[in-house]
Length: 308
Image (cartoon, rainbow, N blue to C red; front, top):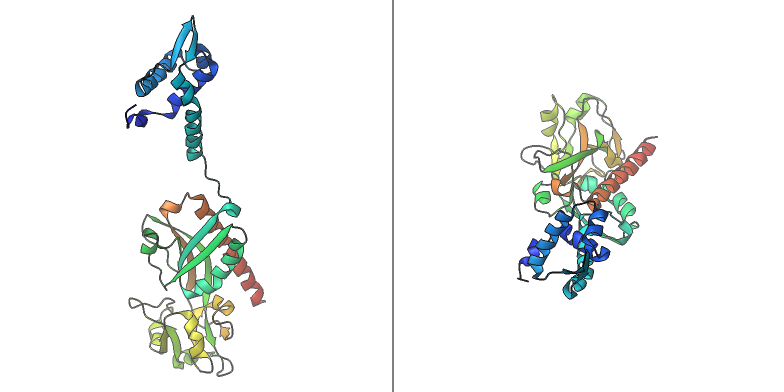
C-alpha cells in the first residue's frame, strides 16, 4: 500500500468490510446492513485496490473466506471506527475529571464582586482549576480574538459578529462618601459644590458617565482621578470627597462608606459577559459560562439581603 493510500479509506467501506468478515457471506452482510450486494461489491473493490489484496476468496458456491491480510485488518479497523465514533460523538464535559484553566478580562469592580464567588463555585467541582485575570476598565475585544482571554466582563455590549454576549445584571449608580468626615449631600447645590474622586478618562469618556444636564458640571469638580474603583477608598477616607460609582460597590471596594441615591437621574450600569464565537459550542466553555451566571446570581441575592 502506498504511503498516501490511507487517505482513500472511509468509515462506510470499513464498516461494510467488517460486516462481511463477521458474516462470512456477502449476501448475509447485505441483509444485515440493508444494502445491495452491488454496494458491498463496490466497497470491497475499493478496499482491494487500496490494500492490493483480494481480501476474500470463494471456497465454492456463495461461501467466502478471508485472506490472511483481511484477518489482520479486522481488529485494527474496529479500533479505527471506534476512534472515529468518539471523534464525532457529542461532547460531554465532566468537571470532576477536567483540568480547567480560565482567563477573564475584567475591571476591578467585577473582579472583586463576581470572581471570588466564581472561584468558590468552580474550584470544588473540577479536578483542577486556575483563574487568571487581566484588569482593564474596558477589556479589549482583541483579548478574545487572540485567545489571551476566554471571557470578558464589560459594561459595554460588543460590536462585531464574532463576539457573543449576554447581559448579567443591571445596577444603579450611587453617591459614596465618608460619613465620619462629612454630611450626606442632599440638594443639587450640594452636589454642584462638592469635590469628587473619579476614574481616569479613557478616550475622553468616563467609565460611569453622569446623566445630562449636569454631567459636565460635576465632571469639572473631579479633584482626584484614579485608575480603578478600588483606589477610590484611600482618597475618600477621612475626606469630603464624593464618588459616583455602581451601587454594588457597597459589597466590595466601597463597603466601608455611606451611600445615597443622588437627586438627579443616573444612567443604569450594565454588566455583560462576552466570549468569542469559536467557543459557543465548546462544552467546557458552556459549563463555565453557566457557572459565571450562577456566581452572579449568588452575588445579586446577597446584594438584595444587604439592602434590607
